Image (cartoon, rainbow, N blue to C red):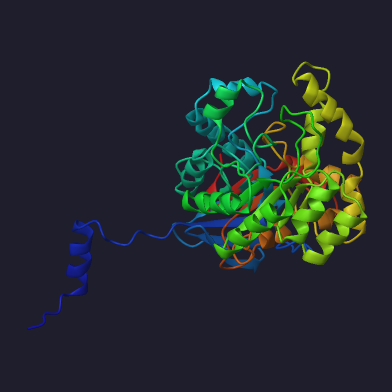
Length: 426
C-alpha cells in the first residue's frame, strides 16, 4: 500500500532530520563599470547578482535587490574577474635560511600558508596554482579555502616537485645523512622511476605535476642552470602525467632544458630566463605556455648584498639579472603564449600584481597582461568555463579597482574589494 504525505508534513519531517534545503544566499553588486573579460570593452553601470557562490545575472543599470539579498555598493569602481596566479608558493616566505628545513616541521607550512592565502586573495588573486610544497601542506590549504575555513583563493596544487637526485628541488646543503632524512621522496633517476614518481604524486593528491627541468637560482648548488633530466626521463614524466589526466609544469631556466621540455610535451615553462631561438621555436611548435615570473627576479635582486643569500646563491642571482629584463619581451614578440605567474614566496605574498608593471615594461599591452591573468590562465588550468571572466554560471570570483585595467593594468596593484567563490574576503 502506498501513502501520500502532504507537502507541508514532508517539509517538517525533513527539517526534523536536518535535511531541509537551505535558503539561497544572494548578493547583489552595483558596479560603476564592468569588465566581463579582457577581450571586451567595459560596460557601464551594472548589477551583478550572485547566488550561492555563482553569478546568475549581469544586468545594465543599478537594479533593485530582491528581498533578503545583501547589496554591495561599488558604483564608483570598475569590477572585473578575479585574477589568477599560476606560480605561487603559499607555504613559504622569502629568505635565504635554507637550514630551516632541518628545524621547522611541515605543519608550520600550513600556518604560514593560511596567512599567505589571505594576503593573496586580498591582492585580488582568487585562483592560484601552488607550484611546489611539502607533501600535504598545500593540499590541506586547498581544502581549507575550498570549505571556507581559511580565507583565500581557489588552490590548484602540485605538491612536491620531481627532481633529479642532488638537483634543484632535491634537498642539498646538509650532511649526506641529513639530506637523506629531509628528502621529499620525489627525486628520481631513469624513465621508469620518474614515471613511478608521477603516479605517486597523482595517488597523493596532486592537481598538476611540477618538475625542475633545469638547475635553479635559489638552491645551494653552484652548477649552473642547464638541463637536469634526460630527454627520456622528461618524456616519461609528460606521458605518464597526461595518461592520468594531469598536466606538467617545468621549472626551467636554461634554453636547452626549455627546448627539451617543450619537445616532449610538457605543458608550461616556469621562468624561461635564457630562452633562445631554438627554445622559442620548440615552445611555439608544441603550444607550450611561458609563465615568466618576473616578480621573482625583482624580488631576489632586491635582497642582493643584504646577507639574505649564501654566496653561491648570490652569484647566481647576479648572473640572471640582465636576462630577466628582456627574455619575456623576446618570447612575446615571437608569438609564444604567455600566462601570468609570479613565484610569490620568493618575494612577499600580496605583491603579486607587481607582475603587470613588469610585463608591460617588456612590451605587453595592459589588455594582454590582464588576459594573461584571466582568460589565458583559466585555459591553462582547463577551467575556462568556470573562472577568468564574468558571466552567468561562472564562479563568483570578482574584484574591484579604481580605473580601467584594460588601459592601465597597474591599477590592479590596488585592489579594493574581493569576492572568491562567492565569499567576500575581509
